[in-house]
Length: 159
Image (cartoon, rainbow, N blue to C red; front, side):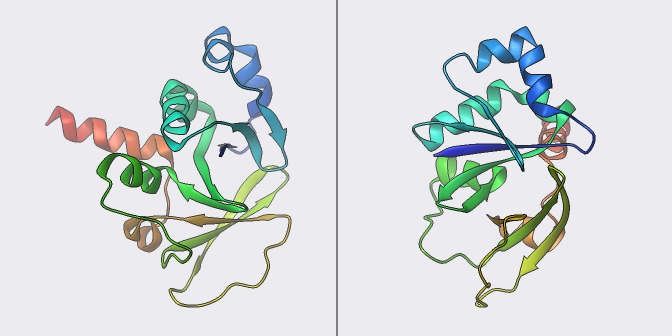
């Protein structure tokens, strides 16, 4: 399974991760690769993918637009959907999923999100597109970023 870290616009994410001793320590057992879409690492399981995302939480908030988890070749899951699958175990992913987005990437940054209508088929993706399975809320309201999601959760905990 691959984890894809998406940089914020204007951030050289690979360089930022390697420049910090803390992130180098978190990634010491992995081999991060710079890709046209961001920084990718290979892990064994969804649990370990979520763990590395948690270890890099500060970097997610500061330098990244979000994180995606490859659930099948060329198909990624949003952070929220991955958490629901792993922790809540109420969702089982199959070959088809109704809530899908296409991320269009240009110059290493996500520049646009598009919805794929439930039940419709999508033509083969180009090299500058990523298919992302997401929750129903993310589908209808936009995927947002991991930082926004975590900030909202922390705010709810404070009340």
